[in-house]
Amino acid sequence: EVVNVGQALEFEMVKPKANLAWPNTLNIKLSAGGESEEVVLSLKGGEGDDAQVRTYSGVPSKAFAGVVRAELQGQASNRILLLASTDGENGPVLVTEEAAKTAQVKTSAEGSSSAGAQVLIAAPEDEPALSANEPIYFLLGSSHERGADARFQISFKYRPFEPLGSVSKAYPFLSNLYFAYTQNTVWDLGGESSPFRDTSYKPSLYYRWVGQGRGLWPDEWRGGLEHESNGQGGVESRSLNIAFIRPSWHWDTANGRRLTFYPKIYQYLDKDDNRDIQRYRGYVDWQLRYGRDDGLMLMGLYRQGTGGYATGQLDLSYPLSDRVLSRMGTFVHLQLFSGYGETLVDYNRERDTQLRLGISVTR
Image (cartoon, rainbow, N blue to C red; front, side):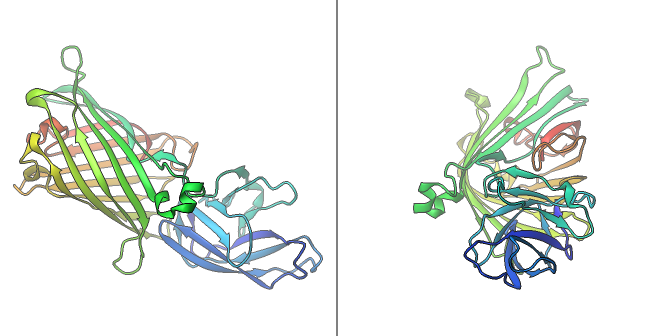
């Protein structure tokens, strides 16, 4: 899902009846992942000024990964989303705000067939109100200490205020507010009656905004509050509340891969059930992600506690099937965990290094 540097994009424009002549150039703004660029589109030869549809072409100088939003500058028009394909035979897929009934709207990569373009009905925003937050997976493994076990996680985020809704129009800052929920469970398949060893429940409320993306400045920010609990009582009760901020930096490569560095920096607001957790977890989750959405993806997590205790996790995944939705599908998923706090009840206990294999639906 990359619009490559130097890849020419063609758009067929429909001229409003009030316009007497076609302009020689039009400016279109491309935006994705905190990056944006205005591309100059030049009028191509062919039909005269009396034609209803004319073709314009331009070449981006930046590489955009994922969903790319495009909108004309200085002209009234629909905004469109480009789900840029890496398959040179199909070209990018065009998603329009409304199905074009009176005119054909299409886009194609130079040198590829525009017959692969599809027209779908979609909202003009970059993501739906309900979407994946952290990876969703189910993994199986075993160890000398516990025998067979499984680990699974569900996670989503919800944007309560639609960016084009009446509330966000009156108070635009509310469109960047999110509620998120993540649940992670370790299942002791080798134990008597196969109990859940422990489950962490993490609801959070955070604000997300785009950064400057220049120099050392992040491309994106998240900041908010998060609660984590294992839902137990008595001596096995574990819970904590944190305030966090998570800057993100993105670097795109010419081969379509993206490197993202997104450390989660937090301060404990309440940790009565585990007063020394900072000795094992520290105050930062150092996180990296590298790969491409339609290929191999590597994710890494590292924690360094103030007491010298370290934890690391590596996740490697590869798609097994075509995507049903952007960044959704089925992936073979390999996970390696070593260190402390795989479950909240074991925050100060080191378990065997654990290797698990399974599937994920988001990553």
